[in-house]
Amino acid sequence: MGQVVEAERLAGEVLKANRTDVGAASILARALMAQNRNEEAIAPLERAARRVEDAGIETLLGAALGAAGRRNEAIDVLRRTTARRPPFLPAFQELAGQLAAAGRIDQAVAVIESAIALAPGTLELQILLAQLLPDCNQRNRAREILEKLRIVAPGHPAILPALARVLLLDGDYAAAAELYRQVLAQRPDDPLTRLSYSACLLEMGDRAGGEANLRLALRGRPQMIGRTTAALTMSSHGRFFFRPSGFAKFLGEPR
Image (cartoon, rainbow, N blue to C red; front, side, top):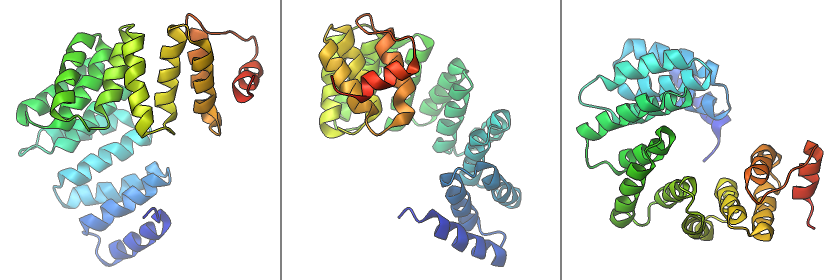
């Protein structure tokens, strides 16, 4: 229900009464992480991990360590967890995410491929693999996977955006724009999808449409200024301003 402060309080009370309660340690850590208090979440998870062998706790510990900037420690914890059998698939996903965040894309791909070998029918692993492959210049393979998944699971919310990204990277702007348009029909307030849609329109020479969608992506989201200005300047049909204030004024005000 989003009441993370109350969840933190209740989980803390449970742990005072029973320090071995794995469920309470997990809830406490999740509540702290939801408040961006990642460093505080580590201690209760470490205590729980020392008392019991629980792949879920170890995976959450890896996530907390990574979020706190201790990525090498996170990777070490998660590698040990992924070595356990039976496999705990969320640990593979978290490890791949940590490796990708560290720029070790080839290793992230290898981790997901090993997970798929253990659980070949897992849709989420296939999608994650396809999302990683373009970053190591394997766009054709990613596209092949996503085209198959589009048939197998046509309603999955992650497939069309991932396929559209591959098409965008391949320069197939019209096809990518059509997919992004379909995604926006379902999620009109998704700023990152609208940003990518804008990039397609700009590359297709539709400057008015591209800029209009950039404004929609930025509206009420000052944290998006960097992404929107990058999209505007990097396009072959974009614009350039000498001052950041020029970008903000241009994108923040209708012409």
